[in-house]
Image 1 (cartoon, rainbow, N blue to C red):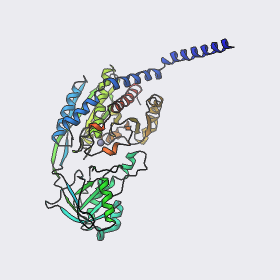
Image 2: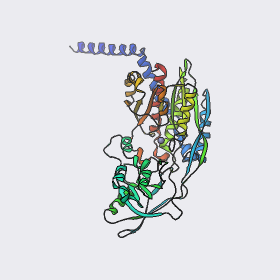
Image 3: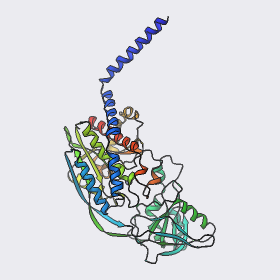
Image 4: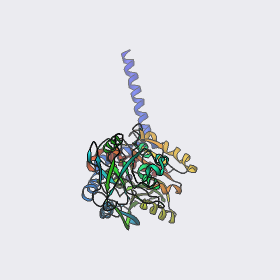
Length: 467
Ligand SMILES: [Zn+2]
């Protein structure tokens, strides 16, 4: 009996083994092996972390139009030049040039219970400055743009409007919570000005309660008077709100931020030309500019070095792509999208076709998968093909979902390819986003490298099988 059992085990073992050997000749296993080699190389010979260290510690915050942005253009061009690509070039674009000026001040004045109190403040990008003497006015708290409208001129005129709707902590994907709150930051100033407000304060866009203010772009309605807008930390937003429940509060605000003349800048581009279908482009990209505070490590230095390292890995693996693989580091995503719009314009003028574009602009955290977008007419058919690769990607904890891609590549949607966004774990992203703590020490080397491996894997599959 025991012999019989032993025999059966041996037979079963042999069958499993030969099945495995047979399986290896099937394309799926060949792909699994190649993905494994991508991960091996990314985790042992990646250059992304060194590049990001240079970008963040030697260059720093890279706001469009700044000397640091120009230095980042030059540095990344040089690094791409070291990879032995078929071509590397700079694509000119014209960018807005906003400067923060002196440290902004926001101060509660003459509070009965607190006296005078400084708040942790950061002017919003594109904000106008205050007069030299600053602005002092009563504060009114609101939770939405609609509430400003409901209160109307009678309640709003002459006051500082304080937008204090938090990001929804119940959202699992923090990007959804951000999307649900950021209208206050982007459109709050003009909405308040429409009803006679003199300035706005905005609760920082983060789920965390702390003392760190977060900046980000605001967009003015050109028809409405431009008023200054400053973010305050979430802790200070809570304090101010608490105080407003007890007494009327006056706040002093001062900033001399301003917009200078538009400036010339560049997108940085490098590519490996396809051997069979060079006219089919697979783009990988991030944005090279960042806010001026912190050093744009997660947003979006990580995305840039991801894209660069994908090309580095493909070269190291001696991979000859059938299609053209192009890395694009876009300029001015943060306050205008000049680089992304110029890239799409030039591409359309040249009648190029982007079979796929993949953007990494959600941080350098552990990758969880990709979201995918495309025009209705082509999406279902093409996405079906992508879904077939899911078992290969799931082996590395990567999922695929329908959803947005990235701001820079979104204008390419009209070329009828697929757009992808890398989706890393999002729980900590908004702790750092647009703040002085978005620095290299917030980035984990291995997590960053896994992002490169994830994107390279998707690039490989798209290149090999098309869409
Ligand atoms: Zn970004």
